[in-house]
Image 1 (spheres, one colour):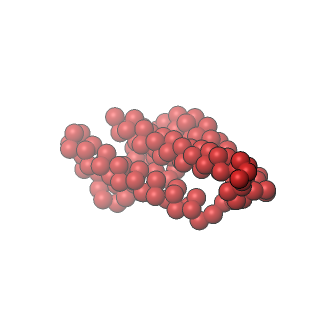
Image 2: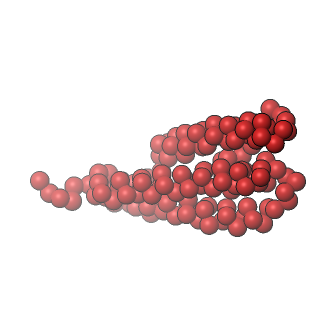
Image 3: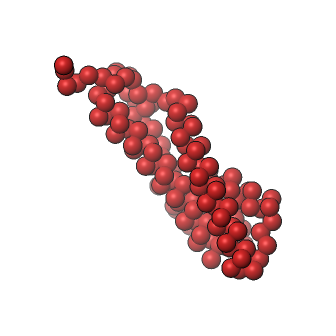
Amino acid sequence: MEHSLPLGRLRLTRWHVMLWLAMGGIAAWMARDICLNYNQIAGTDLTTPHMTRVCLSVYLGPLTGPIANPGANDWPLAWRWAIPLLAIQMASLGPFLISKNPVHPVLAVTAWLAFTGASGLWFFGALLSLGLFLM
């Protein structure tokens, strides 16, 4: 048995979309809990449509904070976080866009872990932004 058996070709598939949407769904659920806790602690009443907008905005990463609290008026801070995190997310897709030949299983697993980690960072940035902008 040869050590360099290829796993297959790396290419973008629906699995990328499904993983990204699932991670975003988890982040949206957490954003909902953050909004509900904010209502209790701050004594405010974030309306259901507003909370829905916030939950859907987690897919925009760090831009979630200014959407949740437009009164904070600090879009430049959100963009300073969003640009590097977006670059990391796009770089994690690189192997899937560039690879044309079959790859070793270790490389395939590494590429998938990088994509999953970058997606996790993106959604963590969304939740961190939400927490900071609601303070």
